[in-house]
Image 1 (spheres, rainbow, N blue to C red):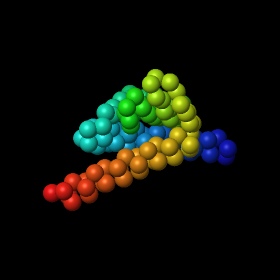
Image 2 (cartoon, rainbow, N blue to C red):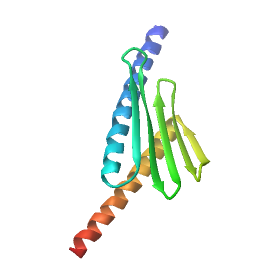
Image 3 (spheres, helix red, strand yellow):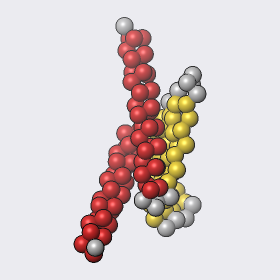
Length: 118
């Protein structure tokens, strides 16, 4: 009974990792289209799980890195090559959501001001 529970939890986690990896790829593509330096490298060999490494420049010499894999989830923010903060698990996902929201609001504000000028 307990073994089945662990198997189910493992499968759910793999699904979350896969969804996050796809979302990170889409985020990197959208940020790049907006002129923000962003990359996402995904790995999936079909046998050993999947994951992704996402990096974006959110300011001058200000970088964020989000790693997701079968081994865990982490968020690292750095400035001038020095680590400022690191989050794991749920906190890493919350930080990714916060930064994504800020970037979207910033984009919407730029679009609004361009429409007013035009």
